[in-house]
Image (cartoon, rainbow over all chains, first blue to last red; front, side, top):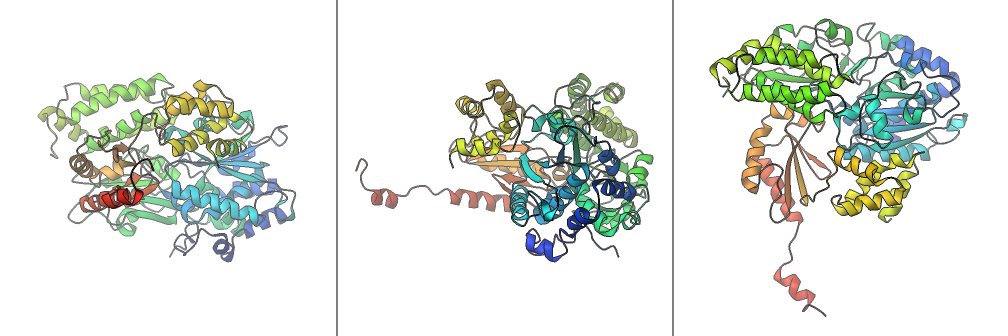
Length: 421
Length: 170
């Protein structure tokens, strides 16, 4: 039986209060980090743990931190990516609503490691309860000396500010988030320079996801070997899985990395709705290519899913059953990406516009011969040719739907109707 | 605190005033309900930044409204997880009972109906945000009960209220 790590407080009454967090051993990892470790030792520890970013890309966290120059001559910044916009994802919201101190402690240790004295939490504006809980937690942590100047008697000073987003999915892309924080329209930047060298206000900046930062206190408290012992060695740790869609028990599940997708959906989340059969699962938010039912025995970790042609992404697991038309799902997903395209680069802005037009007419039974080829050509024109991963995610998802459920698209075009209506 | 004081306090968190435009717009929208041109100009003046910088953010980000919205902004998610839980049926029902189409506002100014992209609460799909609050696991009966509750919170003056207030002008 796996003992929850990240979610151990979420069902505790008043789990969001400092007193509850302290009673469970909270902020002892911060004290340990400040008293027993140099910043470089913390970076080494996180490197050894093999912690990889939980926002979607899976980049090694310790390695990212090590790119920050030691002597920059400018302030360094930590940004927490709490702009959770990937459809099907709600894990960060639940951490912030129910256990915000876990995140604050993780930020404090991470900031100590990279030498930052200021953090901004970029949180989506819709999350009003999470914002209120986090504001309260920051105030409590300040009053108790876990934030502020000379924290716990050390030389480490650190403050956390909240910055509310205003409804743009693209802000989850780290350089678009930096532009948004600087008061501009959120559009991705050309890399290099990478944020670790030139990020917020052209200063060295580390951007980490909420869940990534929440792992850090546990690694400090229990060691890198403990963390690496959970799940696959190259992609280890406790993991939050967001289950939604046509499944009996939607909700947030904490289990080891690498758990088979089928076990997650069928055992933990109760399987398909009564009288229905599983058809496909999107394993990591709508940017992740869907996996047909026969492929569900794949492990839920970065490397296994990549090898299977999909990705872990944000671990937003969306379950689709046999009553659902894949053309409709694909159309809705592409409409989303089209709506959220920031408009900066042509393949994404114009390409997705055309994909939406073709998919809508196919779905409505007005498809034309050649539309399948047209969709393939549009995906080819988008994939690999865009500024950021938004366009790639859209093209990869559509390619998977076209590959695994080609017959459904063909039936729509040939019979000029949706077989599900 | 006045709007100006709130905006100035928000601005103190950043080394650059331009960063404070987003928080300032959120503050101004809470104050005014939406963000018409004069409010955008006021925000720019308080922060001492270019007006075009304020205008471009007010029109780029979907949570900012440059046109008025109803007292209750019904924001129904129609992204995949909610769609799979039949949010379309709820949209059709809302359009029917409110007598407006998606994007419209009821003539009494009470309700604006929108569909929105994923609200990040898919475990309770289908979900709708109204003001600050999320309402999840919705079905038609729950939608009807919610509309009744919302209507009841806006109490219209009755004859007795008017009598108690005395004749106008006094």
